[in-house]
Image (cartoon, rainbow, N blue to C red; front, side):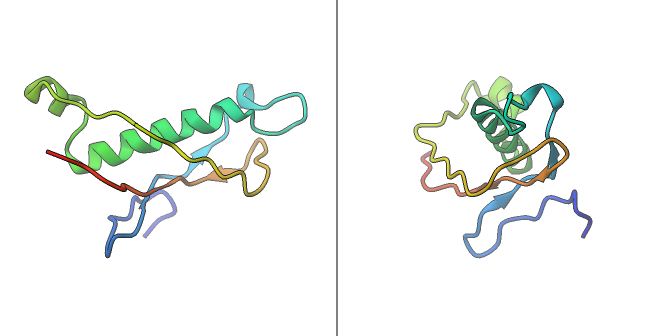
Length: 97
């Protein structure tokens, strides 16, 4: 499997996004990823997950239904800098019809 492959969750594990690259305009004056852009990356990862599950934009158009995020937890485990590859892990906690 390549570094950019999107593994399918198995056994209730997280969905893993493709590897993302930090964009230069996302870096703050301290040389770190600005906290607002963590959520941009999370949003992109969610879009990848929905597309893999078949509930992306076409689903919304055809079924007139969509998804939304009710809660998001961010853990800043280490600093992210320009050039750092980032992969997002998404745990889907609950869903309804």
